[in-house]
Amino acid sequence: MEDTAALNLTKPIRCIVKLGGAAITCKNELEKVNEENLEIVSSQLKQALIAGSGSQRVLGMDWSNRHGTSEISCDVDNFQEQTSLDSCSFVVVHGAGSFGHFQASKSGVHKGGLSQPLVKAGFVATRISVTTLNLEVVRILARDGIPSVGMSPFSCGWSTSQRNMESADLSMVAKAIGSGFVPVLHGDAVLDEFQGCTILSGDVIIRHLAAYLKPESVVFLTDVLGVYDRPPSEPGAVLLREIAVNEDGSWSVVNPTRQNMNNQVEITVAAHDTTGGMETKISEAAMIAKLGIDVYIVKAATSHSLKALSGELRGTIPDDWLGTVIRFVAKGTGSTC
Image 1 (cartoon, rainbow, N blue to C red):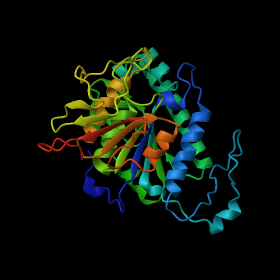
Image 2: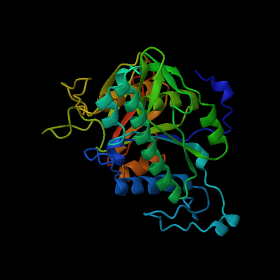
Image 3: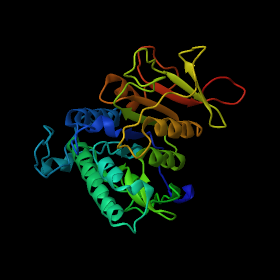
Image 4: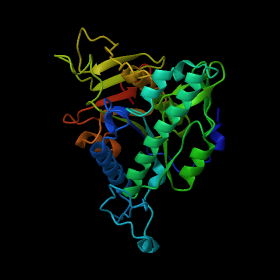
């Protein structure tokens, strides 16, 4: 694993943002981007970046003139007097949604076996799909003036062993941050030392980035308000507003207080989802919180997500904020920190 001393970050990372696949794609339609949601998310990221920067003038960076071009000016000549955004304080990771999951599950890439023609073809097809989505995410962020650069874990040399992280070279991520870019990573098909190949989920990527970059917070943008005690589509589902994580990694719900509240929430995972869905998200979020980093799980493209991205939720969570905060509990204090 990459040594933190080698990263040479010149300033703290404000936030690592996870764009959930179900929030930025139409998950039941193969390879279809939810452009409305993604454009709102991009606009909110831009607002979070320029907050307090002293400059509200933003120029677009997508010069391809493709369909969907932003109303923001992309005039090259105007960049002569443009001031830089405080962009090096954000890192973005996105899930695959309707991109990649179908190809991976159909071919069994997550189970390994590159010697099988179907698996090898599925590996190629999966990477074509997820990198296509990555380009679209980067393009929309760039249209809003966010200096984003796509970075694939496979191409950066990330790999696993028995589906556990084996190597995560963060040198290029650190260099991109140091150069003033916003790295945009994604869930990817990677090589596995033991089984040949597997799928590395965006949530696992987030945890490893958090461990080495030590951001002030991590924000998961999802297609629901937060974590519920059961699938939110079921009658009586309750939004878990605050979850406390102990030193041993165990967690408990502290808000709302319910005598019969079980630590384990009921999880449903789509048949084509090879990365574990919300269960993986909670597990990874708890490990991030153990590092003393606040984690917010909130619905994308809402006023609640904007507050999380803008850093307005440090300390006491407002009563009118809808989402789930996951925080570390210091031993013996009984309070989150």
